[in-house]
Length: 330
Image 1: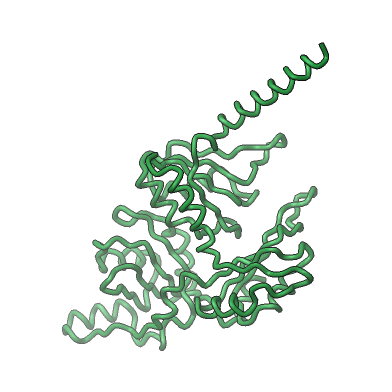
Image 2: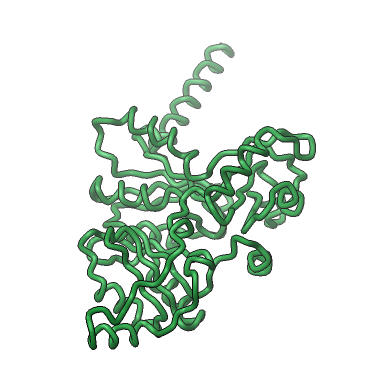
């Protein structure tokens, strides 16, 4: 379903080109290219002088998918790699030679190989996803898509009903566009418009977390930040999934997912790193990421947020209430 919808859209993602982010400035082109060449023949490999990101094009889509699975969040030098599927029109023209042929040509002459033409506007898309709040609980993906034009991918956040099926709307959704400009235009033209009787509240999804982060930074300016709360976790996700996701950024002290009486987790987790630097690296990289289709919401945890502390507080409150009841009976 998702793949079919994407193919019909102008914001289609490539099945062979990967966008590699979070690269260290000391990145060596040969070493990074070789890391990806392990999984298949490359058509193109582009590393700009700034070394902030790279483009890797595979000859075969299956090899690109394998590289994505194996290298996403894998440490390169001292930082984890952050991978995304690049827009389909990131290159203006098809590759005229493979990366191997390019290396051979370069070895025969310093000017033999040229850098491919890249659509710069498509490479650095960061704000191309909108969060649409205040949706009617009956609004479907089809209705939401009809309200927006040139949408690449959209989803309405849902929670499980008593039978365990994801059917109940949570009143908000995410809409992805091909470019940040298209997203901004849609936000400006549709902000406050009625959709099935509800005025849409639209924000850029990656920016909506900034106030929470700023507030957390203010309240805990002098306290080492090593513990993170990860909210909006899909109920099919496990502790192992969360641990593997965050472990790519450093050594973990603890990973805890509070559970309900039926044994299922509550949709959030506490992740504590060994150092503040590792925690900040994970926070920055994962604040706009998804797990099992759910947009992860990260916050800095304080001692008051600790589960044991919350339990102790609840116990004290309960004892206090019971004590008052006994005094009234007497």
